[in-house]
Every structure is written in structure tokens, then in C-alpha cells.
Length: 73
Image (cartoon, rainbow, N blue to C red; front, side, top):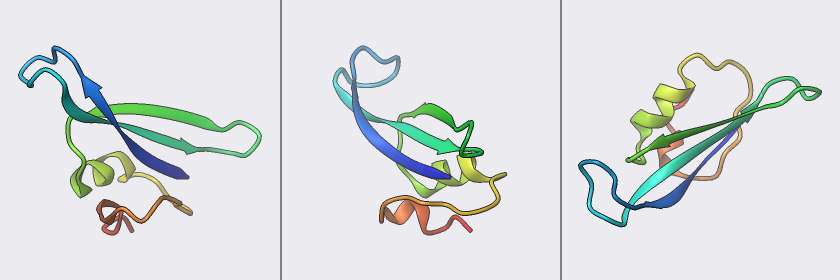
């Protein structure tokens, strides 16, 4: 599985300042012949978010060096 989060600027988000920074979390995994790509939006970038999205994943995990992934086992 591969995962990365990308900053997105959000306009007119309920409860947020206009132009605030949020994150699009992109995950890719599954069998090589039928990969699945999942996009998840979240207003924060933290280890708790990556743990929430990856709690049921087993196998190899590839990402960049963001410290938020260091708690994923």
C-alpha cells in the first residue's frame, strides 16, 4: 500500500476560514492487476488520521518521511 497527503485550499468550508488549508489523503493498494485508489478529505494532518485510515491494513506500506506515519505498525 502507498499513501500520501496533499494540501488543498478550501473555500467556504462550514466552520473554517475562507481559504484555509486542509488535506486530501490518497491511498493506493490492492492486487497489482486490480489496484484501488482511495481519496479521503480531512481538515487536519496528524498521526491520528493516518492511523484511522490504516487500522485494518496488513502488509507492506510505502510513504514519504512525514512523521505522522511513524506510528503506523
